[in-house]
Length: 500
Image (cartoon, rainbow, N blue to C red; front, side):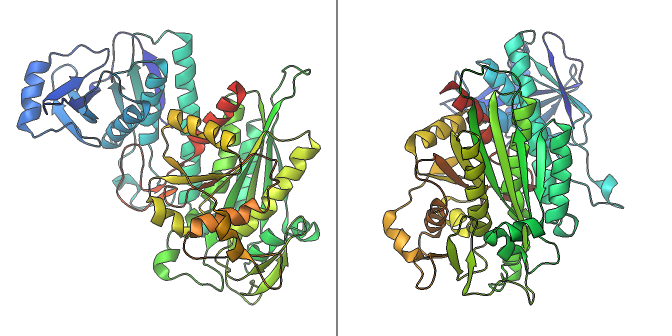
């Protein structure tokens, strides 16, 4: 992974990244942070080449010392740029510098958090996926190897701590991207569980894998039914982080994170069309995110106990696959009529939510439970491909999460769980059906999951179906393919819960 170091006065790189904005009168404004530049000649050149300072615009201008100046768009000029504006600008610059060994970044900042956002964006933008290239691997330009972050505050402990946090966030986002980008023939439920168990154990976390036999014998009907049509059998991975030390007199904070881990989704007997199936290797994004979040929280040594659950299955078609109208018994005893085998994510999550709450209760209770899933196509229709949805049974818990989102910079929008839609999930032969009204499908899926959560347990449902996988052009710090979206927000939520 790309390395980053703080420098207080002098950069050594021959490439310098600075910001470019536009004033209210549409004049270009160079924002070079703590690096002193003679801007007159540069502004003339920038105007000649048609620079606008718009977000995602990157302009490279040859110079003398340094040899190359890279201008990255900040949008409208302001006295204080938001962390996300800086994160995206540095990420866009880092992407544009693939093939360049090193670069120094000097962008405007108003706080140590802003500096950390610049570092995070630069690291997130320094990503490529070449795992399965052989003869064409050399055709892909490698990301930056080394980044210098210029700041007069480089020596401050808070700054160094926040930049280290940015490194940890970026490392785990890269890990999620690698897992999401991996083709399904190289990442089935067993491989996923085994790989993440090793990674978690290496980070000092406890990891347990429930095999298909254990899942069946212990009554995990949701996970079992989704995975029974595949030769690759389902798994449930439980990763636990218990912080060391702390006051025994004070009840520790404890949360559970539950992730949907469909390593490939054909739709089962509700077979998807080819166009809808091509990207379905990404349907395990939620599972990868919650395990990576637990590892990041452990690396940060946050004094909060975390239980992360990855519900893993491959939804395939065969003579053993679940049929439309089959009735299954979920973990905890609730029966479900499976009207649509392509509404499978909610089935594996239902099992895992009940199990996570059960374990949490035995340990003394949970302060909250969060599920993360690429759950519905309706999410993308409602909110597009860059904004995720959050639903809840507890407004205070959701408010804490939205405060975390303001800091992480990720896009989430609160959505309701209208009670009038619940009746559409009624089944004439079982406790509940797995689909209801098509209109408001994202909300109906949330209502289904709500049935598997104790009303007294604060719960968040994150539907990241659109933002988890970028099928379009790269932008900001976001590459094509897996994005790692929601990792930063989960880590920040843990920090916010400690302060609440």
